[in-house]
Length: 207
Image 1 (cartoon, rainbow, N blue to C red):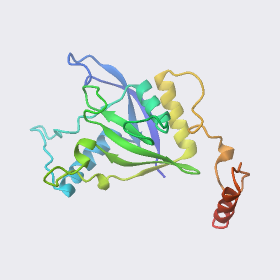
Image 2: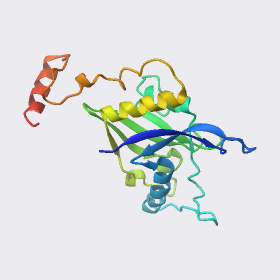
Image 3: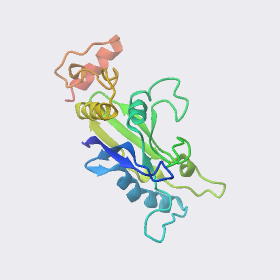
Image 4: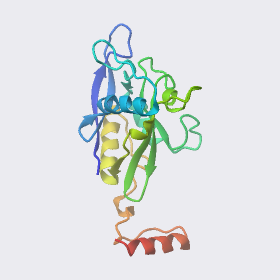
């Protein structure tokens, strides 16, 4: 099972004068997301047949993604299920953006899925490179792993981000689903239909 955390840090990437601004660093399994992207994007480019350029200093010419401002990231990770989430789409979220601050300029987008006891981050991509060009070349982001977080640990991480952002109040319902609602095969679950009862009965037999 993967582990998620956030840390308040600063970047000069958003300001042409080099002024530092506070952002929320995303850390998965103790590795900053920026480093994970640097590892996998060249592989994705090679698999899709599209060039991946490195600067003279060995850094990627592409992956200068910036972490987002804490309040923006918190909103992104707690409101992605809204039906009016036109872009990047329902159940999708933008984790990192270009230094210009424009969401659609050079983003890292993911899909967020909630299961009984886990939260899954998958379908990592930058839409400028994930779709084939006229010549059929692209970056094949299927090389990126999906990350699965245990629900309680994920909830604690989002609460951590909430504190970093200085946001008051309780966590949104989906994120803060009571632990008693998590399915273990031994707990009483509130059912919405006879069909739900049937499938839970079936699932219990395999635990």
